[in-house]
Image (cartoon, rainbow, N blue to C red; front, side, top):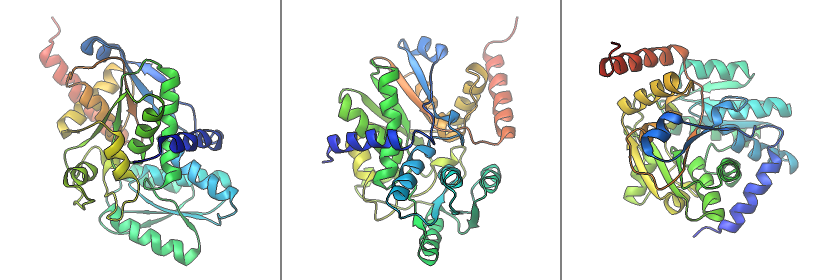
Length: 333
C-alpha cells in the first residue's frame, strides 16, 4: 500500500517546483460527448504545454530537484519521443547538456523536434528497452543524471500535478480518463485523485497492440512485448522488468483498464480535429476513443489529452477519413 498523504505532499512540492517550466492547462467542455453521454465531459488539454505534451511536468520536477541538490552536470534519458523532448526543453532552460536515446521507430517529426531543442540524439535498437540500455551506459560514461521517463518518484509526482489542477477546475468530477503506457501519468494522477477524492473513478486506456502495463497487471509481474505499428506511438515501450513504482501504483489507484483499437483511435483523432477543433496525437486520443463508445458515466468526466506532437499529414488524412465516414452516415440533402 502506498502512502497517499506522502504522495499528496510530493505533488504539492512539485507544483511549486515546475511553475516556471510547465503551464497550468485549461479544461474544455465537449458539447458532442456531453450530449451523447448525458453528463459534462471535459478535456484536460495538456497539448498546450510548451513542448506540446504533459511530459514536461515530470521532467521538470525531476531535473529541478536534482539541480537544487547540486547533482546535475547533464541529463540523459530514453524515450518514445515526448519525454525526451521534455527533458531536452527543460535542460535547455537550465543551461545543461542533454542526451536523448530513442529507438529506430520514433517518428521523424519527433526526431526533428528533438534536434531543434539542441539535444544530442542517440538512435539505438528496435524498442524503448534497447534505448534504455544505451541511456544507462551513457549516464555512467558522462556522469550525467539518468532521468527515467516514468518509474521515478519525482516524475510521478510531477505528472500528478495534472490531477491537482483537474480537482480545482472540475470540483464535481466523477471520472477521470487517462492514457496508460509506462504508468507515470496514471500513477501520479491516480494517487493524487485518491488522496483528495477517493470516490473519483479512474479509467486507464491503452491501445490493443503492445499494451505492456495492461498485460503486466493481468499476469501479476512486468512483461516485455514487441512494439508494433500504432497511431498511439507515444504509448509504446515496456515498463521495465525491475519496475519499482508505477506497476504497483497503477494497480492500486487505477480502477479500470481499457484497450481501444486502431480504428477507434483513428476515428477519435478525426473526431477531435473536425468536431472539437483539437489536434492531438494518437496516444492522447485513446481517452476520447473510449468515451465515444458510449459507456455509461456516473457524473462529470475529464479526459486527459496528453499531447499534440503528431505529423500534420497524418491528421489531415484522418480528418478527411472521418469527414467522409460522417457524410456516408449523414448525407447532405
